[in-house]
Length: 546
Image 1 (tube, one colour):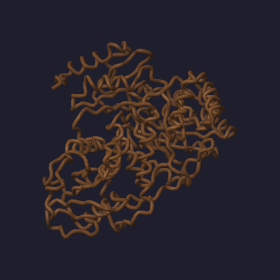
Image 2 (cartoon, rainbow, N blue to C red):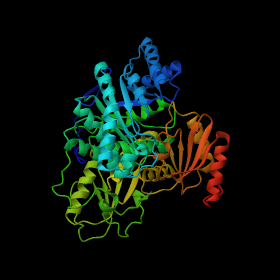
Image 3 (tube, rainbow, N blue to C red):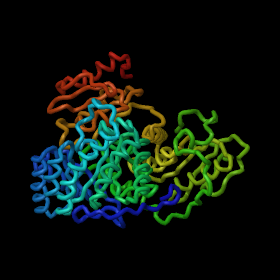
Image 4 (cartoon, rainbow, N blue to C red):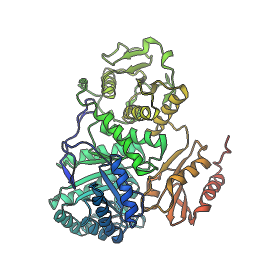
């Protein structure tokens, strides 16, 4: 793997039904139904729409043994329609449901944070080494029957770690950190390997793109150190909907794909599940088209101790360009002396303080630009760097995904002080996309941030419609982060950095949060939006719409 030259990480092949993941297989596309799994007809119909859109794997909510058993009927209906897309059971808090599901579907997804552990209670904040080891023993006892069933049936296993659902045990020792998320996965992986069970795919997700990318990289490192080569599923969870959801997903997923990391992806949108597939396919194809690009110079040295964080990686944040990161600069008005097109050689600017403008015609433009900056810094260059990228896309949707993929890769790796998007679009559109990309990278907030799940069978209200209602009511509050979540399984945790949360609590019921604190529990859905607004007003953070 290299951040400069595109080459896909070689993982072992795991077969999910007749669909191979990892190895020489293409990066697979998947989505998840939002129907009640007990309604096998509706679930099968939605799975069919996902498959017809190009989805290669379909996941379904499996809350209990009844839902797990219903998967067999979903499978029967799909097979009768000639659709053999693999089905994945999504299991939380219920090892027995996982056992039942392993008998009838092609893959079972379990969450290491709640497979054995109860929901996060924070009742026990300290574990001795002996107590910690005893907890791992409980995991082994519960996991072994599932591994044996999967081995016997040829069912694959997905270990799906979510930022919002780490166990109390992990939280007590690691806190809410990438290291904790990685260890949550590694505990289970070590048990699986000790039992010689290797039909495993791993996902490790967060709604925060910085956390998501850092955590997946750390997982890859830890697996390499322990001789593991399992395939990886990528996604930015709770990305939201529309343009913002697409940009946020593209920024996070592309940053890792560009490094060769990732064997299957999901673009999680608060929309119809089948709408996720064209976005995922476009993003995958855009990144993998870099195969065979003109080679990029690999820097011989990088400054020692220089982390891949934003503050240390961006050269020249010394006042030449305003902080935080800026966007919307008119490329045509930038002095010619600043330009170094194609990043083909290092400029003689080491004693100068003028900004440097970089662009690239390489198919792997981001790799070339990052190489240039690393080599420039190694020579002592400290000039602010503005990256300008040109796109010829007239379609604003395609433009948004490409620009988010490229600029997101640079920004999430801590490169450049400013971005300039050059495209056949009006100034307002370009500036909107630039600001959305900066927000997706969590570097500059210019509008309300909505952290919203894509919904699933656990969601007991129409989440896409609800998200639109909440946006219409509070979307003018530019300084706030608002979580709109379908249930409590991951909701409170995934929206942990939100200012306020609107979380499904049961059929027709919603709970209102201030940060991580539950303020109003289980109130009628018809009253929930008013309660959210009242809380914001009570906190003195309400502004009248203009």
